[in-house]
Image (cartoon, rainbow, N blue to C red; front, side, top):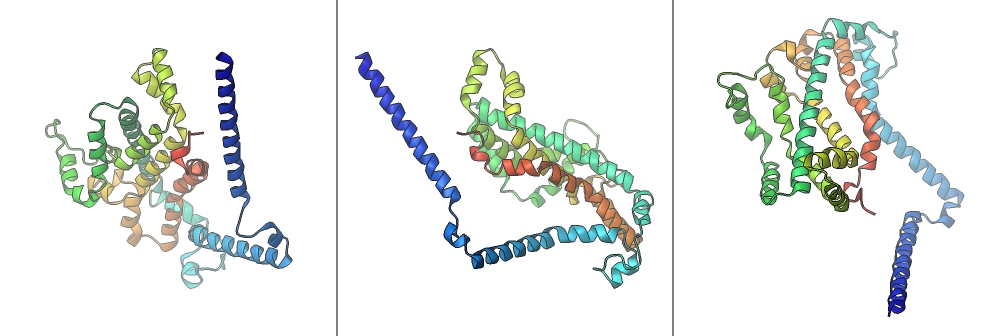
Length: 322
């Protein structure tokens, strides 16, 4: 009897192995297939046509994607008259590097740049903290009322942000439980509302849903509590989604204009997104373009650093499967 069971298990295992191998082979075959077959690819006319198509697409993407950024970088060190008379010429009368120093010192870009970094760092921390803890509670801890909370979080996505502008502003002017204290001209007025981001919560929850539950059960068996499970198991396994949320949070805080303008009326604490439009009418064009070029450094650096995270996290649903 034992021998027959063992043979049945071997047959079932062999069947599963052959099935997985056939699926893998079919996937590899699909990956190798393309619109142009290997025989057609060997023809000279097909190779020339594909090469021209690739070059055309590459040039189009470079012009459409990098063109505005490169033009801004060029105009940042170009005198105003040259920019107005010959906007696409490469420095017909030389490069004016003084535009950068003038924008940094005279417009006080350094101060507004620092304010923007502080706002972006605080927004990053609050959004990451709320998204990971809320996603952990809804996905891993799963209390009895988790479906209700999940529905409420999802419902907030259908409320336009402009509808919440007035009540949120009144809450900042007179926060509950704080008496007569106002959060105007306080960075908390920007950080706290940005932390309540339902999209990030659902994104992190969806990623946590796909983590292997066997690891959680093993950690609980070894005596890990909820905090230890969150800090030592869940977060180290969630680096891709943490990178994605980090980029979303920093870029959103860097380009936000309306809300910082309302809750930070003091120019000394305003970010670049608020101060640059305010000083545009009082600044020479070349200096203003130099200030704009400086303000784009952090978003470009974020993209270059985290582009791999986006590519690796393109399919978050199956990131930990297989």
